[in-house]
Length: 298
Image 1 (cartoon, rainbow, N blue to C red):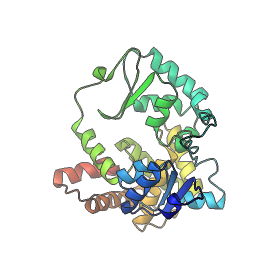
Image 2 (cartoon, rainbow, N blue to C red; image 1 turned 90 degrees about the vertical axis):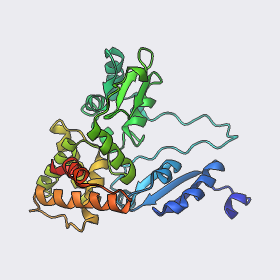
Image 3 (cartoon, rainbow, N blue to C red; image 1 turned 180 degrees about the horizontal axis):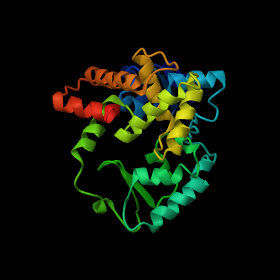
Image 4 (cartoon, rainbow, N blue to C red; image 1 turned 45 degrees about the vertical axis):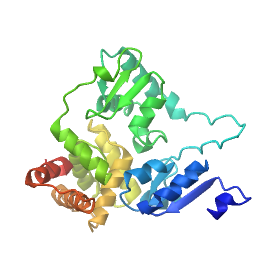
């Protein structure tokens, strides 16, 4: 607060903590039109994440320091300050890439709203680098709405939908939501785990067990798993793979050759169940079974 009130102008503040008590401080920085980057080592409260301009996981931060993540971790350009006369920063190249062109053509020609996973599967084979951080946009939903003002995205109803705003509206989206998908979305929102499908989680864990025979280097492992999932027609973002790996480490799993997919699955599911307990989610037996099936045991 002294810095904000002082003569010297500090444009960006870095906070190395996943403690949500810092949310109000980040809010003050945003109110003063400053950029904030939060470095965390685990799950982050949704309000804290949304308030910060950028959230960097500890493993990505360490990779940056070691110089191995220059192509895997992209950071959005700083927001212009109030009163700046400089022209706004240009959109990232990914927004005008061949993948963006392919997606535009698909959405513009569609006969109705399209499931977000289908759109992602159209983009990723054209530009596999998008799977790491969606061209610096962080999430698919952000990327898809920024490549064209006429393209809209809605995460609900599950699994998320994309449509041409000139021809369709939210009123054209399905009105019946899958109860299991609603449950999964709730878990993802509260615990901040990736909102993947059961098939995607299973593919990550099976592929992870296989690729551990090739390397235990975390950065290389995440890339190998991401690429293999894409080759298997089950695309997942590298950030999601990294999240699962980090969860396994939190579950005290030593990444080494010889671990089976069943062992990895048990550890990952146990980690997710623990996050639910910490978050205050009380699950009955049926919900616990659905959670286990979704997170990898299904």
